[in-house]
Length: 568
Image 1 (tube, rainbow, N blue to C red):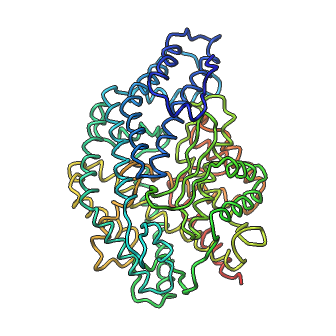
Image 2 (tube, rainbow, N blue to C red):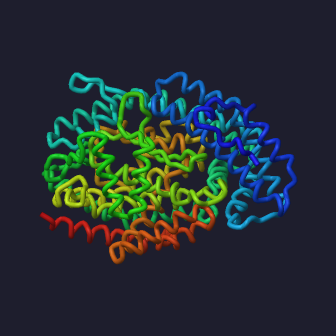
Image 3 (cartoon, one colour):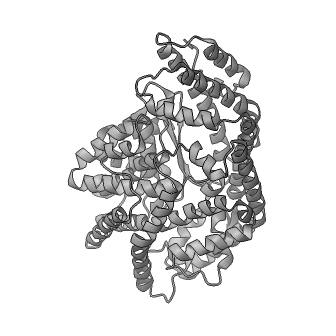
């Protein structure tokens, strides 16, 4: 057995291919049979976890400080010197297990995934995939370096977000236009990088013998339970069942603000011109109150979050040269999550922390699974873990429960949150439909002007309640500002599917909170050992692309919103 694995994180960060190679050679040379299978899989798990955590820590160093040149050099060295031989070695081990005909208990889904990965694997793609990772870093650098001068101080684009909630319309418009102009200044850089992304991805698909990158990505993302046509059906269902509800929200907002037209800088301010919620004064308060909320949801989930605070597994504050966005990753050797966020003092920060903590709880709950390969979970369900937590935690936002707000403020926060669910589905449809168009028409999509036109058309189809007149350049370049399009292609429909599942989990909790949370945790603990529809079923939900399911969800969201509006 590999008794010296895993090494301490500090040692692991110094490892290169020469440190890993011998372990892979050992596994490749060992006989594999019924008697040796358990030990062989355990050692492969330990080795795979080391490789995963090594890259995770190198990547985190680059996004926590995009100006750290040494971190970038170390990550690039991994991609240049370790990534390709390690992926090749991993592939050989997958092929060895598949050839053996052995089927370990709880391994049906991992074996299915391995067969798909083996079919997709091409050695010629390894350097291209490494290059794609570097280009992802280039996109993050462009976005991370975007700052403006605001009221005498250099400010990141993210740090301007609180101004968009200001009741002074002229001030929030000024801030919005300042940010938009700074983002447009990088239009040429992002367009040039985009052309490189498309050309590279077409080569990757061609090397794999596939007609287009969507076909490649579908297999790479292990999407066995739905098709591109199902996604198109989902877009149409959103247009039918959700867009009218979103229009009602926009129209109500327009009337309450007393405006002729709703502009992009009018979307975050309270529609009755109440000052924005101020949920916390510092990051310590954000952590402490979130911990209290999780203890109300479930004692064990609260203990998980306490552990994250104690072990320093949260990087929440926004700062210059920190990459944008939020995510939860994991340190695989320790089976511990790590949450990355850009908190700037808004209620959205609270929601983001609740969301990412749902992912973190997934890591904790599935940690008991014996093998690394059993923990691969499709994002269609991973996002159910996070979005359900947003809703399950929402009753405990009040100060009387140890949370952030008065009863009235908590009601306002929940209304904003529930409306955001309705408003998100149309935006998700824009992002997903855009990507389908891109990879169905790669020649057209290599022309940024064609992308601009496609995006603008989708905006008008799915979000007609916003007036972009005079702002056409900002409207049409919305695809520039969606990280997933550039660095995680096709990873977005998962949010829409999972949000529908999460509303179903929450609907169950309104009837029986304890049972719903127990089902939620049971589903998380399954990791990737059953099919996607079965994961939904275990959580008390069902995977759906239908307008009828969306209508039921919208009805629940709107009914609850009406009830919350009556709270004083």
